[in-house]
Length: 405
Image (cartoon, rainbow, N blue to C red; front, side, top):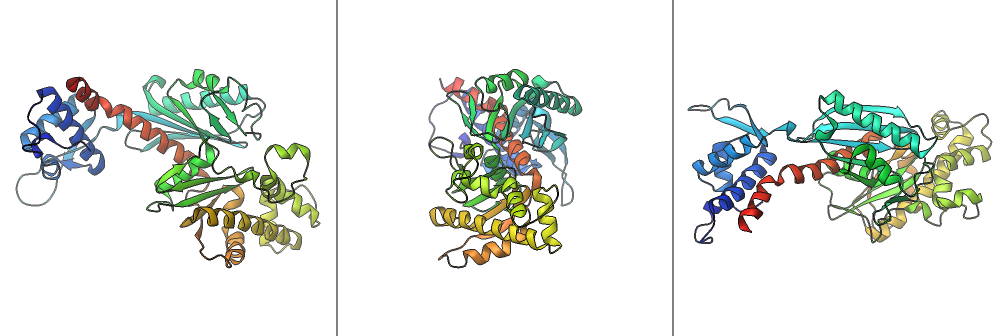
């Protein structure tokens, strides 16, 4: 947070009034954002600014629509004080989770409160149908929030794959037909505008878990997603780790499982072929389960004591333990969070995984995601919020630069 000018006697010898005002507005805005609802007196105590200076800064922020009065303090002696908070309608964000089965989206105001959300079966016949669906859902959300789409400050879209900013394509996304084609990103931006950013879905799940789930206050953790696909989101020293080319966490390519599997499956790697939903079904059939199967049905049957399903789940736990052991020995995370449609079956997976890990010299805690199927969407909203706040709250910073320049 920029240091307030009148809290630094002797350190600033010259400056234009507009420069001083911009610095102080930014200081006050940061305090309001972090501690709202907040009074003028509290701002003055925390910032070191004089009350007249705080009042001047608040007037500018009120005039610019960045903060608003939210009521008066209660209790205590003496007169009550006006309380201030960030104006929620100063900016809007949209988060979108695009998966093989579902498209989930939500719109939130700049304070982070989700105002509306939607969920639809993904139209994965082609990339064009999916892009059209994404655009339709996003615009419907804006209408539900009572705003025009051009009032959305930032949007973040999460999907399988690795975003290549140089070529503007999503790499390694075989579960979404046509998703890796040239021109995909431009097509999405034509639907949503240039304010949309792209991120790997499991990375967003890790961000969501760090913001709202078990990853809060944890500096180093892994979000391991196992469902239609497999991936890991790596949070190191409190920040998402993407690697040199954005491919960190693409553990579907680990040489674990049947490396000589079906040729078509080699596109997404041996570990994903063996461990994702299709691999669970394949294992269950190999042990004699009959009828139309899904991974969900295999886990349900295992809970009922079905021998074939139980053996398939045991194999799944062993494979997951091998991957977790690999990640643990390289990264030494404090926590591994299991997510995805398969990973959420912690009642059947955590105990056998922990037994497999007992030989390790150090072991992470294992927990099932606190956010469930909402993890990617929560991460998308959190990422969009960070970008939106940078833009919306940049006005004092721009004034500061203009005045200093």
